[in-house]
Amino acid sequence: MVSYQNIKKFALISVYDKSNLKVLCKAFEKFNIGIISTGSTFSKIKNLGFKCFEVSKILKSKEILDGRVKTLHPKIYSSILFDRENKEHNKTFNNINFPKIDFVIVNLYPFKKFIDKKVNEKKLIEMIDIGGPSLIRASSKNFNSLTTVCSPSYYRDLCDNLINNNGVTDLNFRKKMAKEAFLMTSNYDKKIYQWMSLQTDKKTIKLRYGENPNQKAKLSKTDRKNFFDYHQYYRPTGTVMTMMTFRTRTPTTCGIVELDSNGIVQQLHEKASEPPGNLANGAVYLLEP
Image 1 (cartoon, rainbow, N blue to C red):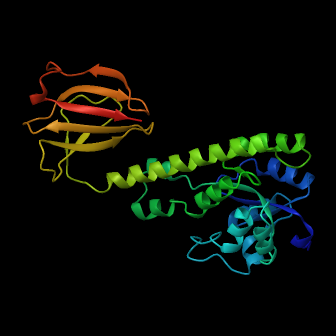
Image 2: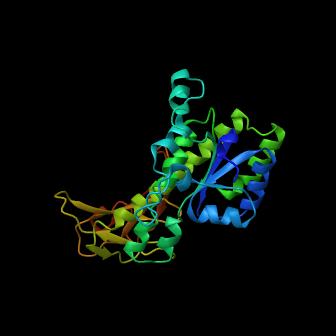
Image 3: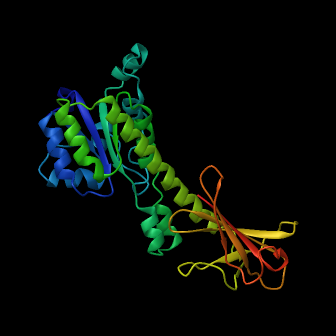
């Protein structure tokens, strides 16, 4: 077996979506970039015929807690986060005896897909990725030295950039990939937040009318002591719908206000059977990106 100590640069690959790995591994092999990996990703890469080092064997520490802990280890994060221009960082890293990771290829458990499948809560919780976002954020923070790729859709771009730069990536590409990675993890956390928010208040009433045809609108009864209740409903696009109603016999719709990300009113939709000024019989919907 080839010792990982004879290889200068490594890619850490740990992915749920294993599509197009062959293209990526060929590029790493061409430029003598070693591959270290975890669990099923390690098995997939080996089955494709590429050399690969298993993280657990390098660390001499097996995955635990049914795979909940695979890459959460200080040696891995030291390799990803140490500042290559800092002498003290380099000295510390050289003492830990671990491969130098220059590429982090990670995609996450598809939490949103499992929400759509309507799986039970226990299974859905297991789809909340912990190690993946941690690796992506650490690598993206250190974009001056590391390349982060969080989707198979960027594999071809990575391969082209390696070819154009003789086995390394340029800073502009690393910054672009870091930006996309932070956007992805932000959206991922938002989906988890939205799902958990919907679990916290089960006392709801249905709106008589006023929602879009593809939506089932509802209103939460809360313990608030003011003159309206509210509930946030999450559309598939990720838009947050906050519904407010005055305490009347049957809630109806007064109007919809759509705001952009800066809070600027974009559109006002009149959808009420009552005049929009007649708030005594109406509900107000506020859509916020």
